[in-house]
Length: 396
Ligand SMILES: Cc1ncc(COP(=O)(O)O)c(C=O)c1O
Image 1 (cartoon, protein in one colour):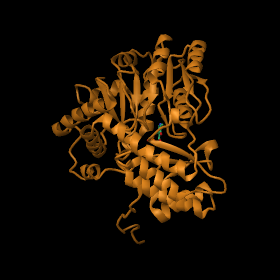
Image 2 (cartoon, protein in one colour):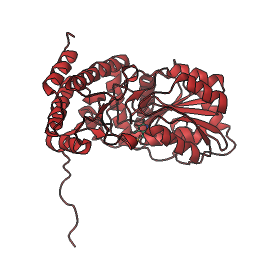
Image 3 (cartoon, protein in one colour):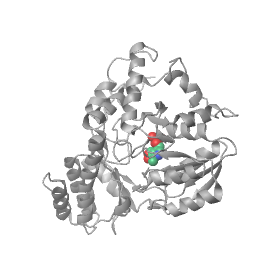
Image 4 (tube, helix red, strand yellow):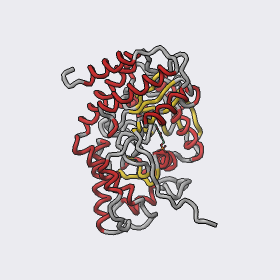
C-alpha cells in the first residue's frame, strides 16, 4: 500500500471575516515557527509570566489568577463553570443566544441546577429581568455573554448587572470570547468575578490557548470546595501548581500556542487597548454603514451593536448558503450564516483584530454586493461602497 497524503500541505489564502477564527497577524504566524522549548524550561517560565502580564493588560485586571487555559474558548468556559459551580448550586444563564445554551450545558454537567433569564435572540438582557430573576432564584452563579457571536449583540451595562448579582450574593461569570481585544472590557472596574475568552477572535491568534481570569476571592472559594471540580484537566486548584509560583508539571502546555498568544497580546499592547477598541468601532462602523446603504439591515439595534460581529439580515430572494459559498470560493472571503433559528436569515460578518481594516471592509462589501446581485436581490452596491468609503475616510 502506498503511503497516503505525501503531498505538501497547501491551504489557500483566505480573508477570514466570519465569526472566528479571524485573520492571523503574520508576526503571530512567525512566532509559531520559532523553536520549541520545554514547558518547564526557564525561558518558557519567564515567557509564561509575560503572557500573564500581557493578559492582565488586555483584560484590564490586576487579578493574580490570570492564565491562558490549554484549549479553545470552550475550555476556558468549562474551566470557569466546572470550578465555580458546585453540585446543587443554582446557576442563572441567559436564553438570548447560542452561547447561553452552552453555559447551561456546562453548568448542568458541573452539577448545577439551571434557571433562566429570558430575552429573545437579537436583544440584550434587560436589567429589570435580570433583577427579577436574581430575586426569584437567588443563584449562586450568574453567567452571561458580553458579546453574543450568534446574534451580533453587545450586552450593555455589564458593571450594572454585575453589581445587581453581587447584591444577591451571586458570583458572575462573563463570556468575553468575542469582545476581548476588540470591544471595551474592563474586568476590574466592572468588578466581574470570572471572565474567560478565546484567542481566535479579536486577538487574531489561532485557537488553542484561551484567556481566563478570576479574583482571589473566587480562587479561595474554589479551594474551599467540598467536592473537587469534576474536570481534572481544568481544575484551577491543580493548574495553580503550574501557573502559580511552583511551576511544577500538571500537563504539557501547548507551547506554540502560548508563543502565538504572547505575540498577539504584544500587538495589542503596542497598539494600546483603548486605541484597539476605537479602531474596531471605526472600521466596523464603515462596514455597518456600507451594508445599510446597500439596502441590508442589521439584526441588532444600534444601541447594542457589536462591532466585532455584525449580524446582517439576508435580503429577499437570496440564498444565504449560496452567497457565503460564493464569497469563499470566488472571492476567498469567509463569512458565516446564522445559527439555530437564524440559519438562512442572517450573515455573520466578523470585523476582528488583524482583519479589521478599511481595505478589507471595502473588499467584503464589493464581494457581498456582487454575490447578492447574482441572487437577484435588490441591493445597491455602489451606494454601499460609497457609504463605507465615506465613513472610513480619515477626514470623516
Ligand atoms: C461567545 C462565545 N463563547 C464561547 C465560544 C466557544 O469558543 P471555541 O469555539 O473557541 O471553543 C465561542 C466561539 O465561537 C463564542 O463565540
